[in-house]
Every structure is written in structure tokens, then in C-alpha cells.
Amino acid sequence: MPQADLVLEGGGVKGLGTVAAVIRLLEHGYRFPRIAGTSAGAMVGALAAAGADAARIRNVLGCLDLSRIPDRRRPGLPLISEGLALVTRSGAYAGDYLQDWLDRELRALGAATFGDLRRHDEDADGDDATLRPDQRYKLVVLVTDITHGRLLRLPWDYHLLHLDPDSQSVAEAVRMSMSLPLFFEPQRLTDPVTGEVSLIVDGAVLSNFAVEIFDRADGVRRRWPTFGIRLLPDLPKGIGEVFPGLGLPLPPPFELLKKVLITAVVGHDQTQLSRPEVRDRMITVDTSDVGITEFDISPDSRDTLIRNGRDAVDRFLATRNGQALRTTLPAKFDAQPRAGTHAD
Image (cartoon, rainbow, N blue to C red):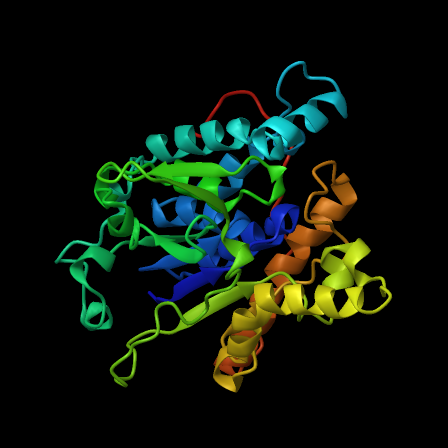
């Protein structure tokens, strides 16, 4: 059975393409010793790291009601609720529905906390050699600590806040990683020793595609590869596709300031992506027709995104294996809500 570590880029609703790509890799027989993800990539990665197979992921994501993800606070009135939440909570939507849904699904898979996702001695091997014992987990979630201006790789970095990683909620970490600034409310982590509160937002603010995270630091050849699943175009050139308003030119010096801010956000990832060895292990899904916050995505756009995710994997593996792979029609993937809260 082939193995690969996965790094999953964030992208909001575009993440349906990631779901389809992960399912397709599972259908090709791959298993994933370790997965790192940001935002929507962290959500899909959590399910896969918890042991969900292709059918389970397809069924579980079919129970997710996309229209409920932007959940308003009281009084629940359009624009009014968002405005009040922005002023009082620094985010238009609560994000509670998404966290509660994911927590139920992960508990059903026996993976409520990071302790449930620890790589034990019998699972560990040579490719864990350069990781500390407290880094040997099946899942890494990237979040941004804007109080201290740093990227946190959870559960690896919980020790910086004097928190026990094994007891921390996986769903809570994923929710933190999905805290798109101003859209979702930022989350908080409290250091039990100092009492200091860290404000946490989307990991994409500092790294949306940490494709190098599992690379060995000792120069030894890895026993299996890392595959990265990418959803967004090269930035800052493609910023207009991701955030249409930012694609418009501004008068100087505002245009310079905009480019400086965009580069500060995407510079690390773009530097990694410029390396040929990174491009060679990257599965790129065409998500250009879907917006990050397009939670009212049409069925046709949803089906196209899913098809693009599956086709991207088939093309990647065909190139990697040097032979044509038989392309099958995409399995039915229903992203509309169904009865019940989780797959049995």
C-alpha cells in the first residue's frame, strides 16, 4: 500500500476540491502517516488523520450544510447581526456550527483530542527521526497567533502556551485555523501559567501551504514522499482571483502598501513554491470558478470542483508513475445536508 504525507492548502469553499482529491488518493490505495493542513485543508485532514476512508469522508462531508457555516449571532438579522458582531467580536460570523459538526464527526471516529492522533512507537519509523517526541502526531493544524506575531503548528506548539497537547480538542484547533479575519470571529488560547490570552486567526495569514513541514532536516532520503494539494493561484499575481477587490490597481502609494502587505502574507509560501522539487510533488486543483466564501455554491459549480479535484489526482499520479491511469467518472458526492449528524 503506497504512503505519502499530505499538506493541504486552505481555501474556504474551494476546499471541496481538496475533499475530492483526498478521496481520490484513498481510492488509489494511499494511506497518510501524517497530514498538515490550514483552514479547510485542516478540516479535511482531520477526518483523514482520524482514519476515515474514502466512503466515510464522502458520506460525512455530505452531512455538512454549507449554508449554515456563516452562522449569525443574535438577533440573527442579515447585515445587522454581522455589523454588531464585527464591532463587538471582531468577526461577522460565530463559526460554532462548523466546530460542533466537526467535533461530533471526529468523536464518532474516536479522535476527539490530539492524544487520539498520536503516532505511537509501533507506528513511528525512520521518517520521524528528525521530529521531537512531542511532534509525533498524525495531524498538524496551522494557526496564526496575532498576539505574539507567530505561526503555531498545533499540537507541536501548544507547549509555548504551557498547554498539554494530548488533551486539546482537534475540532477547536481546526476552528481556529479557519478564523478568516473579519469573516469569522477570532479564537483565544489562554496560557494557564501566565494567564496571558493569545488571539488566534486563520493559519493562512502566515502560511497557507506549509509544504516543507515534514521534510527531513538531516539530509537523509525519505522513505515516502510528501504530496501537497493546492487550491489557490500563485500570489500576489493571482490575488484578484482570491480576493477580487484586491486585484484592482490603486493610486500610489496605496498600491505599494497593498503589495507590501500581500507579500508579507504570501512571501513564505511563494518562496517554497519557487523550488522545482516542491512543484514536482504538488497536486493543483482548478478552483478558479469558486470563491473562498461562496457558501451558496450552485450544484453545478460544486460538481465541477469535485471533478477537478479527482482529475487533478489522476493527472498527477499518471505523470508520477509514467503511465496513463484509467479515469473513472466521479462518484456521487452530495454536499447538501442529510438526515442525521454523522455517518454510522
